[in-house]
Image (cartoon, rainbow, N blue to C red):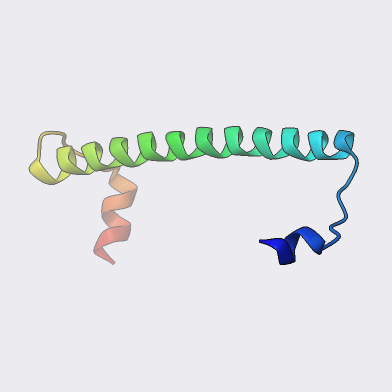
Length: 71
């Protein structure tokens, strides 16, 4: 520990540290919001896929799509 006390470490001014901290906090908040949205969308996708695969919800196909699929 005494070795580290002898080291000189350059620190930016307090105001610059505060600006950096606020920016990082803002980005963290944004990231957590995006992660929450992604989790909700994944849950929704899983539910929709389950409904489609079990036949609970039927898929309507247009006549044009049927012709294209048969090619």
